[in-house]
Image (cartoon, rainbow, N blue to C red; front, side, top):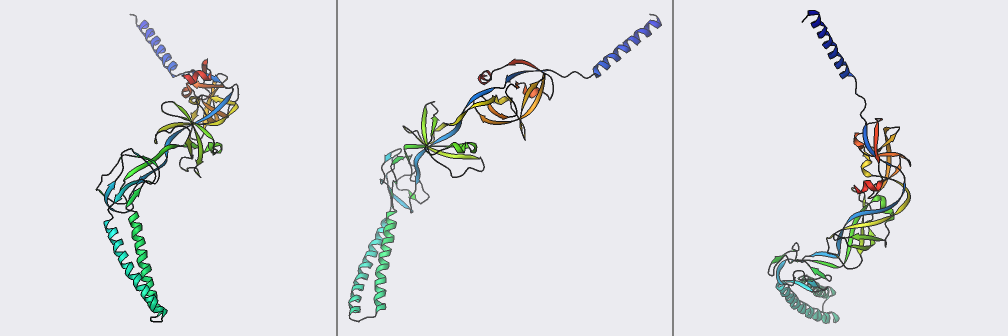
Length: 348
């Protein structure tokens, strides 16, 4: 090949390579993000608060003996229903009975002595101080007997109210102390529902108000609010509420959903929850304006199954990005793939 031809080919290749490098250095244009949007509009908002609740027995306790000793009688049938005042257990009281008998003998002697000294005092046979000692001795022995009888009463354990016993944790003949559990007792013919709500809704809780209850088997019931805690929990910022279940009772400990009607609003802007971009100090939405994504700070209100209420930051008619939110850059071009309805997003 001719030398000049070779030089020409090499020069052409060098220019082509240089051109490719210069093209590679040129910055690429901004990438267009495809997004789905909703058009902000006014809607009526039904605000139903959903809270987790637990069924609580009307009365419940662990039954302990008041004194230590060996069980001589135990009447705790597993799961049995008992009436108030039923004797559940007896503790060996032989020592107390003996002490009472001894004190009664001492009392009889002290009373005889007191009566004799009273006659002597009437005829000035003794001074008042001697008689006072005798009458004081009588009173002391009577007090000792009263104390022994009180201890004797503690050897008998009775049911404080009617209810259902739990599983028996102890056997007859066992040695028990006040720390021992003889039985558990629950009054479950009427049960209560305990639940909590955020402090935001504390003002709508009224004694005598009604809440709806949904059980695990999807049955719907009602309950009547009877009381609230006197203060809001400073750790959770929740208010604890107690209601009485209407109708037939549920087993204590059952989990239920509590639905509380917090009123409704006729004019609210609702946006899907996944469109919200949370930040350490604010919440943002991406709004499409002139084909570009704009980030706006918003304030949210009530959360519902459909989405979240926007109380400040956007207006009716604004185009809000609901998919591809995390890929949109500030003032970057976006392409609207489709305009969705709020109901469509909720079902997805």
